[in-house]
Length: 127
Image (cartoon, rainbow, N blue to C red; front, side, top):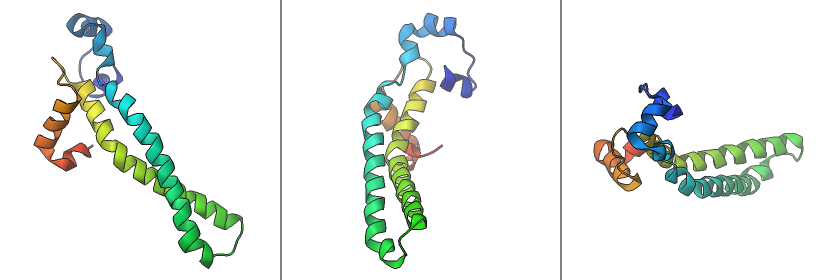
């Protein structure tokens, strides 16, 4: 409902149930279920990579202390977030596209092909 309302579509609960049945409320839910392990895994992997890079390249040039620890956390967190966002953004784009479709849903693979056909690979990162 939220995605459809934000997309400016005229909707209400009765019209969704009437036109799509109860399944209309779950359109696009498979994509987040599949992408959540990727989201969590890449966030932790990127964070750990950030810690390792900091220890190998930055720590030898800094004095040990609370500022070093704080900068390490910021760097590792930023790298983890960047890696995670890069990997998960196409799935989020796909989810939103599926949730905002009207009529017969295309499914995740056909929707992904449609996005790539219209905008190429960058089309998965648009928005």
